[in-house]
Length: 67
Image 1 (spheres, rainbow, N blue to C red):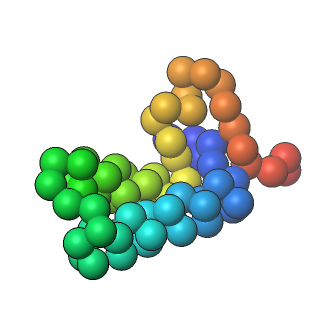
Image 2: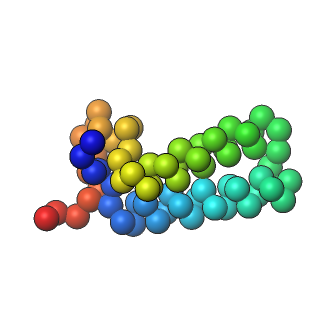
């Protein structure tokens, strides 16, 4: 896998994931919507650590800085 996510993209995803997790565990969001958003947050965290987003690949999106 070639990296296709830049630093800003990774940080934004981690912040969104942290917000969703906080909202879920404080019962502001719950039910099916809460579970779906929690799973999506897990995907955001995973893709942030790997620096690869599978949805970017088919569209040839690359937010990495040029080397």
